[in-house]
Image (cartoon, rainbow, N blue to C red; front, side):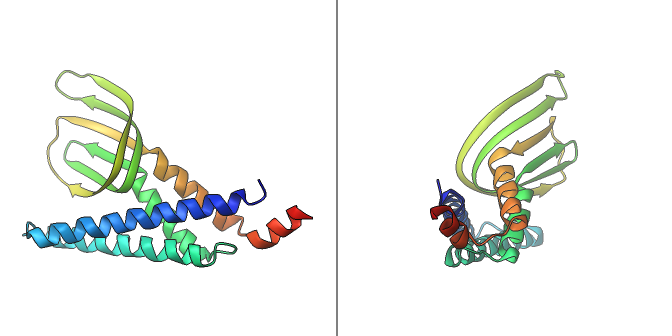
Length: 173
């Protein structure tokens, strides 16, 4: 129990690094296939590449100094996880960014039959970025519970930034 905060931070950092590496593999696979032809497509891939690299850098930075991680790494991860936390789909606008697993709670309303769906989904490691203005047959709000949890966890560690090595030593005595 004495090293629990440190172990949780290590596990989350390893998960973050894995999701960043998965994103890089996905990006390079798409680039090698040559399917991107629009400027917006290239711009979105550049944004995804920057986010994936930043995710890896922050995850490694936290693992390097897990006893007292830099606030800047934690803050970057808070924002990266926060943008993954919500998906919006409304008539004419869609936004989603995700890297890694998704545990999603959602509310969706279909326009034609006015059916409302509420549910919970799980998706394994995936990578996606969507911003588009396209007509859809439904509106939806989805919350990625895993990303929201990670965002809150990194926020907790940044606000309560304590030396985990000293804390462990105090708990041992």
